[in-house]
Image (cartoon, rainbow, N blue to C red; front, side, top):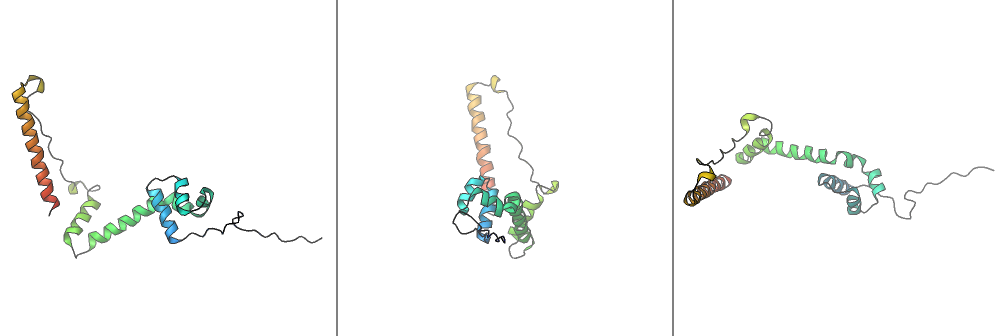
Length: 149
């Protein structure tokens, strides 16, 4: 008796087989970037965890790297554009700051007291607190002015 060819039906559970789309791939990449569990990502895409692993192995394994590469590409574009030089400068600072020592901003000097708190009386402690509050207000004012430029 001749053998009949087996027909393989994808899905096997009565559902249409899943076909990844650009949007579903984007969801998986963003899910991995945000450290969502595979079960949660699968639920967002509307498939089982096994189907997620089968169809989106590359996005699961490399999603965070893919997103960082895309963000780096966008940052390079901003750094090279000439329409807004302020944006270009900030993009260059963000790119070079962690990598090039001369692009790092100096850390503010810590505000120190001349006296040991154990040797101060209440009036001296109150004066020291007032001085520290003035220093903090001045630092906030300087940071606010820099942010408004």
